[in-house]
Amino acid sequence: MILQGKIAFITGSARGIGWATAREFALHGATVILNHRSRDTLLEERCRELEAEFHGTVMGLAADATDVSAVQNCYLEIFRKFKRLDVLVNNAGILQGALLGMITNELIRAVIDTNLVGSMLHLQEASRLMTRKQQGSIINVSSIIGKFGTEGQTVYAASKAAVIGLTMAAAKELASKNIRVNAVAPGFIDTEMTRQLPQEKLQQTISGIRMGRIGTAEEVARAIVFLASDMSSYVTGQVLGIDGGMMV
Amino acid sequence: MVTSPIDKLKQAFVDVLGVNPDTDFESMAYGQTPGWDSVAHMNLIAEIETTFDIMLATADVIGMSTFPKAREIVARNGISLT
Image (cartoon, rainbow over all chains, first blue to last red; front, side, top):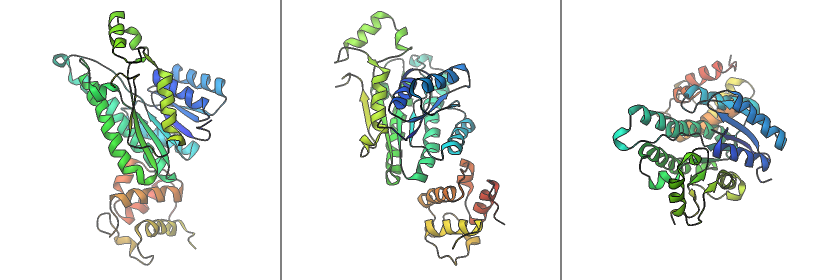
């Protein structure tokens, strides 16, 4: 129970890596605050699922990462209920691809607003709550694409590279306050999105992974648990690749 | 002993900025009062929030540029300073 007693807010946690992270956090004893962009039945279902399976405290907060006041309200709610925050997993993000000549201004705005501006807003608010207790761990979810790029994902790659930049800057600024800031860079992970790829493209990508298989959301989640826990108490400003040796 | 809310607010400034308790608080201003730089400002915000058990909006964090403004912002967050 390496997260016992910790209050953890995981953005974009109704599906995929965020949901897997929420489950791992609950498994390891954390009080989990779930987030989804809208207050629909999915968020409520996820809260009930987590409570039923792990019997811990669960809170659900609806907020679109691009909505400044909604994001700020999340932290007011967290403050009112818990008075502190120990962990932020900055996971909410979108992936919209297009070849260079077909990138619209709307696509750029949507991806940058969610992946970068949203992450920045959460980082800003979370760090203020953490500063009061002079402790905390922030984990930003970047991507292997943010480190190395890939065709058709220029905007997404830029947004995730920027997440690495903000991780580095914030790690330096917050280290003296005992707040650690790290990023994870997942590689090819089994999610709803990758399941939609054509079989040929899937096999081609897997052939480039040294471990010879696609990763799971749970494997990403467990790395995030490590960075959230006191097991990584002297680790800050790092980008942890979770990619099965894709870029070794 | 610091008991009244206004004294607690002054004490936050004394503790974070290292100013003399007898200083002229009304004339204190961000960037002008020695020691009140951006790093100290964020520490001051944290100290005020902890002292009064409140959480300030980002606009207030940025807008708290003088002691009178701090007093006004704290009052707006439900703390009576009279």
